[in-house]
Image (tube, rainbow, N blue to C red; front, side, top):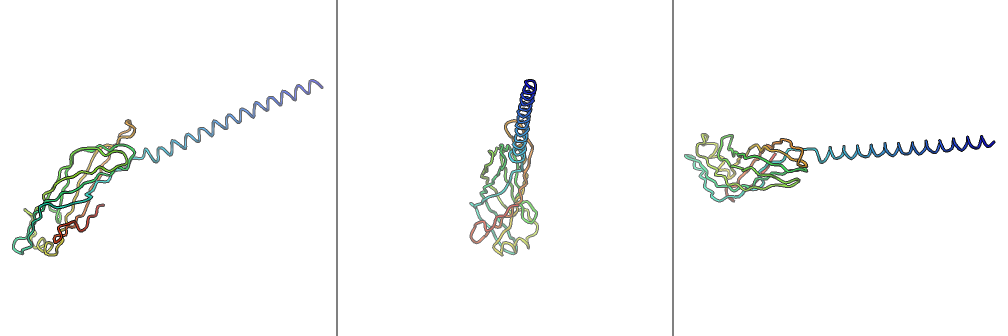
Length: 198
């Protein structure tokens, strides 16, 4: 009888040990699943690197001369443009020098230099640049005269901004942003009537 009690006690102890071991393995498994979920969430949100947005965000005018005369339509406008680089990443975006072209019906009417700089994580870097918009050298005088007579001059801006996004000072990825903006200048009021960027 004592032998049976001892056997029952040993089997109870063995079962207790087995239960403790199973609980320990379950906790280790749950910890691994939790850590994997955290790493996956981190990789999908914070480590995901997106291209920044590069656009003309505002513009004003200093010099404003234009003539819609049929014989010689022309414009000479000095524009102060605010260019923005919106960085939605969790790391800093360092970009190189670049140029922005301003176009009327596909022909270059001005350009602006953007010096290399950086946009901090999840912020917008604003840069001011001055552009001389001039119709000198344009060929299609009839269409220009018509547009100037209508009171609205439509100018496109385009450029490419290249740089690197730096995450945690370890991971660096090359990214670039394209600018494609349409600026409708209200000639009578000497203001930007419409500004749209893609």
